[in-house]
Every structure is written in C-alpha cells, then in structure tokens.
Amino acid sequence: MFDLAPISDKPGSLIRLLSSDRDGEIVAAARALIRTLRSAGCDIHDLAAHIEHANGGGLTDAEMRKLYDAGYEAGMRAVEDKHYGTSDFHNVDGMPSWHEIARWCQRRGDRLHSREQQFINDMAARTMWRERTEKQEEWLKSIFCGSEGS
Image (cartoon, rainbow, N blue to C red):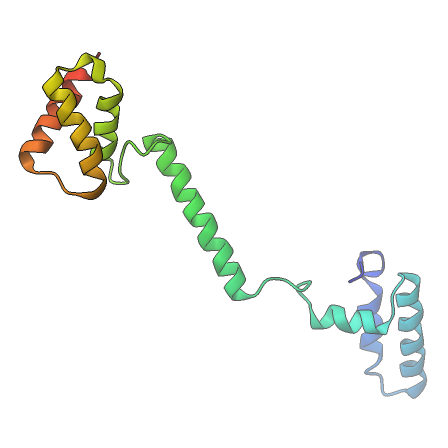
C-alpha cells in the first residue's frame, strides 16, 4: 500500500473529470491521474488496490468481534482484580473461595491446635474437588475468622 496523503486532494477531482462528455478532458484527466500517482511513487494498480481495500485491508467483522470480546474480558478481569485483589481469594460474586480460605489458614497453621491443623489440611485438599458440608463450612469459617487478626 502507498500513502495518498501528499496527493489526497488530486485523485478525486481527476477521477471525476473522467465522467466528462468531452473526450479531450477524459484523456487529459487520465494522463494527469497517472502523472499524479507517479509523483507519489505509485501507479494506477496501487490506486485500484487502495479503492478495493478502502479500510486499508482492515479487520473483518469476526476479527473485530474477537478483539472486542478479548478486550471486554481483560477489562472485566482488571475490574475484578481492582475490586477483589489479584489473588483468587474471592469469587466473582465477592464471596471468599473456600479453597483459598483453607490455604490461607494452612499457611498460618502454626497458630492452630493440632486438631484444627489436621482439619485445615484436609479442607485444603478437599475443597479442590468436593463440596463441603455445612458443619465443615462453619468450622472453617470460625477458624478463618478467629485467625484473621493473628
């Protein structure tokens, strides 16, 4: 592709002259168009390609949609990261992830009783693959809330 900017006002007016009812004006316009294009370092084939690809060979609708969707997803992640932090400590709905709570408690296991440590280790593994019971959630929550300030 070439840059039409230096001659941007000329090709349009010369192309319009091609519609003249006078043969001499048509020939003169065609020759002037060729000279003008040559002065910009291109030819009639470059002009034709430029017209055929008016958006500069731009993106298809599908490509634009794919870029939009990717940008939207990245934006949503950025907002979630800003609101909830960059760790996976919270789910999108703002509720804590049980697995991350268990891992957080596990990292602070030295502050727990041995029975609590055993339970937390079990929950750190279990919450990856299985649902918790209500009783397990309550105990995990109580350990988490009790050790938050520690």
